[in-house]
Image (cartoon, rainbow over all chains, first blue to last red; front, side, top):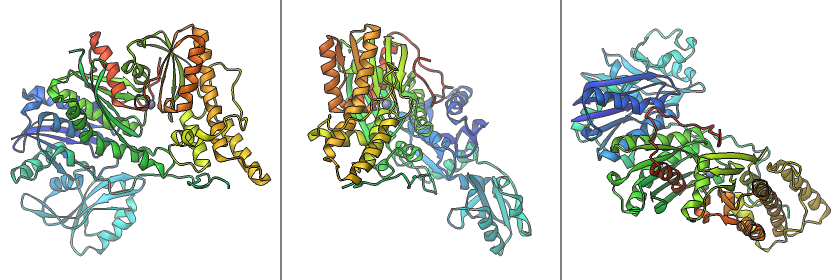
Length: 235
Length: 337
Ligand SMILES: [Zn+2]
């Protein structure tokens, strides 16, 4: 089973190709503005190295967020178009899961962090399992203060991974049961491994059903002092 | 076959447009309008627009191909708006188009949205050819363009503040006529007297430029005073007078350019060109001067995928190659530069 995986939910974008979860080609780019220009040349590079053609792909896997950048949508649109063109089913994964899987060691509860910008962070708890992780609660978008309180109330030891460096240092003071670790960003390599497992269990979907995970409402600023709704005709 | 089969994708603002063209013949053209989504804000919200594009694009491409009876493998090229526009909105269409073209093994043509508007009349009129003067007016842009030849454009002038469509939107909102403002005022003005109130026509001394902020102030001042004095005219008269003020300026500047350049072909594009009164006034003026007027049907004036594909069709038939894979969106793209 030949898989193409695409990651654009954080400043680090990456693509990978591989067979049944083992990676044969990969390309990474850390530049939060460069997603659109990076993706297709990177995919083409991987294909050229492996001697693959687009039609050789059986599964297209993509990270559907949460992620703060408009780049997330460029990865999803790329994956959708690719899957539609070659008639391949898709596998979707959450950025939080991708980060947590790489951190899966020991017995600590794992808290991946994605910087959503403007002082907000997407988080979710995971439980380590042999060879993977299992969700252990719902994802949330929180402030660093709220996250600190959450970790303080935890009875067990915790491992925070992902982009925790984007949180203020004060977040970590006095948290004795908390360790911080890597990876900082999700990667296409990990998506490929997860996708191989999901696809083998039949957990695939159609390109039409893919939606980004936003976890917050769009920014809308209405100037209510000058905004007049319908019916304002001065009669 | 009468030309290459091209899929055109447009996502620069608030409409997802997809079309299949065969040469200059529209085989299918579909649109997912976001007007309702943005209506409660009285304007386009960039993040709302980008979210809607990503939901609409894949089903719309499928629909356009199905309606045209074209299998993706039969396409000769994929065309997509590269700019100008909202960056997040452009990225959805551009990323989708690039991946589609690549995985089908077809060339990708990144198209200037404004050049798409300049080409759109060709889809309706075989005789529409440069040299021409084209008036482009919508919620996002208002320009008078001298089309010297295909690919050779000089922007003679444009708005120095609000776009014409934006002026319609803001005034319609002030009058409580809803969004989008152009169609609302057009409809309300039908029974109105366009000469009831004389609102100002700005920048008379600059032949090709317009400004609509003075008109806005003048309408607001007028209505507030009339309300206080109890001399408020029927709303239709106000709508008709506002509309006439905007249209007068667009028509005058267009034909200033026709006179100065000596062209015998006049074109139009952009959502404001769907306005029935503007179309009538342009036609009268063109008749009086004996020049040809080529304003396509309203669905080809507003943003659509067919106009994007038409530029690619022209380029492809002249053997111009597609774009490199490294291309990115160009939100600040400017015609003629
Ligand atoms: Zn337009």
